[in-house]
Image (tube, rainbow, N blue to C red):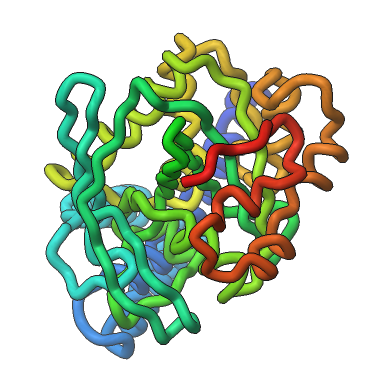
Length: 347
């Protein structure tokens, strides 16, 4: 009696399942190794050992599954993944760490009619990146006098990546800048990879422009561009209050920063998208924030009548900031020549 013929479609299905399973094991091998390296308890050598053990276990499971068609590996490794994910999701964010001076506080706001009082507005006097006068202040802003919203992008390495800030101007000459930043501890430095693996909490900083802009243009020598946003006053007000709400929420419930899903650009997009009833399209330029100006001009978010090249050329403020130094009219002088900005009132 002849042996039954194996149906091709079931054979193909088996191959697809094995390919998907193999890719899944490889993916969790890499992700788990990195997650354990960054978040396992103990000093660096201990974390490296734990991460190495996960990598070795994953490769053994993969070998057993591929080479021996081991059902045991097919059963045990998913349990290992489940345990890893349970541990990962249980890692709590915190507001109580030994924070670096510049992120020691998250801004907090109290709204009383049109007036918003912000606690912990940063107003450092920067001399170098390590020599500065620490100053946190309480300031009150009248939203009835809200006059402008400006986007600032600060480039420090790649043209694809920039830090995003939004600065609000008032009729009385005041400016306050909001920035969504990693909340690094005193011993930490920024890491794009670490931002994927809960290395940093998230913070919202409100600051004087002579602090948060000047430290980038004059101290770190970054390339900073300023763009006037085309936004009706009710939406400006809503965006301002969205920053306040986000900051108050982080003070109550800390969250982790994520390089892709919760960074300085995606948080701003989420707030604006909510304000304009979800009409903004998703786009790769929300991740590669250095290209954000071309996205915003596509959705008519800048002052009309200017090309992208004109906006970028006129919005390059680093040289003006360096020439201005720490002058009291810093905010006015860095805006000289920026397309769409009329002469500003003296503070």
